[in-house]
Image (cartoon, rainbow, N blue to C red; front, side):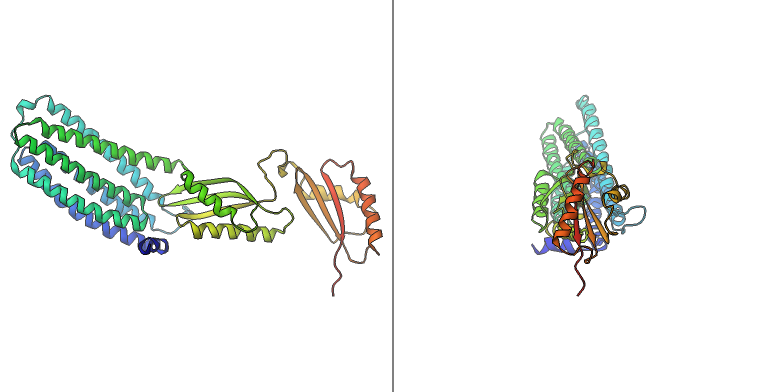
Length: 389
C-alpha cells in the first residue's frame, strides 16, 4: 500500500523522472540485446534470432517514445491544453501499437516466404542458441523491473512498454525452441518460430493501438468504476439523486462530469457548497480521477416536461408580475423557482407593509384570484422581511 500511495501524491515532474530512469535502463538492455541478436543471428544463419533482433529494435523505439511522451506529459496545463498534456502518452501508445503491428506483420510475411524455399537455407549454428537463451533471461528480468515501476506510477504507456518486454521474453523462448529444433535437424522449426513470434508481435501491437484509439474517442471507464463513483456522489450529504454521470480516460487518469439533484428550496450558495463537497469526495476516494465537473439541478432535468429552459426568463416574469401585484407596495426582493415546468414566485415586502397576519392573508387570497389565468406562474407567495433588531 505504501508504494501505491506514493503515486497519488507524486507530482508530474516526479512521475516523469521516475519513468525516464526506468526507461533508460530498458534502453541499455535492449541496445545490447538488439546488437547481439542481429549480429549473431546473421552470422549463425538463424532467421528467428534476426527477427527477434528486429523485435528488440522495436523495444528501443518504444523506449524512446516513452522518454519523449513522459517529458511532454509532465508539462503543466496551459491555454492551448487546459487539461494538461497527459494524452501525449496515449498518442505515443497508439504510435507504438501501430509500429508493432507493422513489424509483426513484416516478420510473419518474411517467414512465410522463406518456408517455401526451406531446402536452400544454411545450417543454424550453436552461437544463435546461447544468445537466444541469454535474451530470455535478460528480457524477463527487465520486465519484472518495468512492471513494478509502471504499477507505482499508474502509467498506461509504461505498462504497455513492460508488457512489450514480457512478450519479447516469451517470444525469445519460442526462438530458443525453434533454434534447438533446427540444430537437431528440423530446419523448418527456426522459420516456424520466427513466424509465430511475428504473429505474437502483431497481436500485441493491435491490442495496444486499439486501447489507445478507444481512449482518444473518449470511451468511458468500466461499469465497476462508474458504479463506485456513483455511490460516492450519492453518499455526499445534500445530494438527493444524480443523472448524466459521464466519464472518459486521459492517459493514467480520468475525467468525470455529472448532474446532481438537490433540495429545490436551498440557496445558490448552499447548492454550490454541496457540489464542491461532492467533487472533493470523488477526488479523495478515487485517486485515478483528475477532475470532476458537478452540475446542480433542483429537479430531474432529464424530463422534457419539466425542463426549465422553455419557461420565460426573469425579466419577462417580473413584467408579468407587475399587474398581479398592482395596489401593493414596491417589493424588496423577488425569488423565482423554476420547478415542474412552471414558476413559483416568493415576493418579500418591508416588515411594516402588512399590519397583521389577516391583512397578509387577504392580499394573498386576492392575488390567487388574479393568478388563475397566468400560463407560467403557478404560485405567488407574499412574505414580510423580518424587522431588524
